[in-house]
Length: 150
Image 1: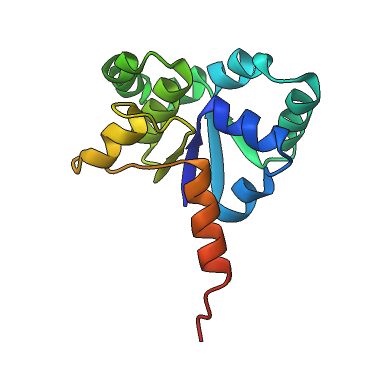
Image 2 (image 1 turned 180 degrees about the vertical axis):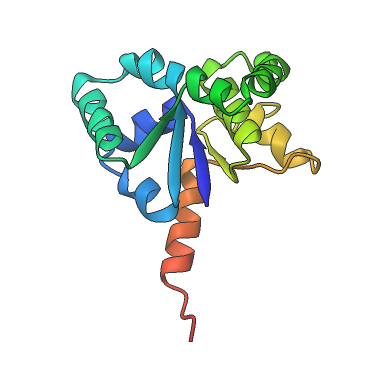
C-alpha cells in the first residue's frame, strides 16, 4: 500500500520515535517536495535530520514538480491542489493532491476534526483515497500483527 504523507504526521511520528509504524505498515511512502523543503522546517532539528536520513536511505520518496511535469501529471496535480485549497492546510492539500494524482491508496494525516479532509473523505464514496490518522494506523498495525493467518 502506497501512502502520501502529510507534514504533521511525519513530524509527530518522528518526534515520538514511532516512524517505524510508517515503514512497517506501508510499502512506499511519498511526500511532496514543498512539504519536505518548507513545511518540515517547522520540526525540531533532530527530527528534520532523521527525516532527511529516511529520504536519503530511500524510505521516503520526495515527489517534485519536475517529476510531475516529466510524467505529464503537473496539470492534474494543480487541479487537485486548487480543489482541496479549501482545507486551509497546505500539508493536507498537497498530500491529498499528490495521492489523487499518482493513484496512491492512502493519505496519512493527523487532522480528524469535523469537516476537515479526513472527515470529508470518509463521507465521500467517490474518492478512491483512504485517509488514515495516527490512531487508525496503530489499530490496523496491532490488529493485523496479532491476527493468525493459519
